[in-house]
Image (cartoon, rainbow, N blue to C red; front, top):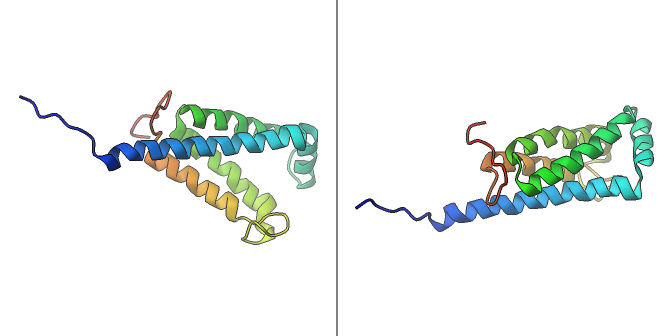
Amino acid sequence: MPTTYAPSFPETSARYGALVLRVALGALFLAHCALKLFVFTPAGTAAFFGSLGLPPALAYLTMAAELLGGLALIAGFKARIVALALIPLLLGTIFTVHGANGFFFDSKGGGWEYPAFWSIALLVQALIGDGAFALSPTRRHL
């Protein structure tokens, strides 16, 4: 008679931990997209990007990345790849907006600790996997 295998609690709970991280990251991206769309407005966000010396069109690409990336993370659609793809977006905020404001995020204009931590969380998501209930899991070997 073949031996059956029941996953251990840590092995099972890791999948749910990855799910919680994935959904939380996705929700944060959707919240930041909503802020740009409904509070700052797309035109206002584009003007802000322009004031930083960035092409205003990059604001629309950023909002699209936040919206589509957030939805993909929540749904578990290739979450490992999406997480890696979103890291440059956050690194860009460090180098263009928050880096000059110091480390702590409570500094005027917000320091770079929050986007740095968010980048690390995305890297962790990519390393630990898609988690439970992923609609389109990433293949095991990237």
